[in-house]
Image (cartoon, rainbow, N blue to C red; front, side, top):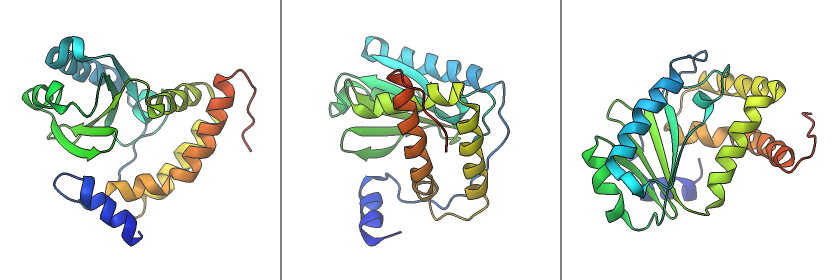
Length: 190
């Protein structure tokens, strides 16, 4: 990891970097139910402050192996207005882990959930949903993504962000096909 990336992570991670052993497991049919339990907690905490709440990431794709961490996308009016959501989410048992421009991330104390918070209109929200929806229909890209994740999980990582960074190229390739698909084209996996 280069010095600039290290400095950036040090500035946005609450609690600092944490050594990570990445475990990728076969898809678990209980993951959608776990999402619903967590989503209910978020909705109860924020009420009308929830503009959109979605199950994202690999645990949202039936048949895809994943880290057993439920990823969620929460869209709020203004992510910079932390008073509108941070205290309520903390009160519901979620810990603020990441504070970066345009994005906040919470997790459970058990570290089995990541709640990504963005404001309405942020392009990241479409990226998450396009990637999820494409992986649900493309068995070729599901297989490709799973093989990369399993290979990378065999390495030791100084922080989970390093593992995520290592997946960037394949995620961007898949996301490009997802965007073509969303636009009505017929993408081809190469």
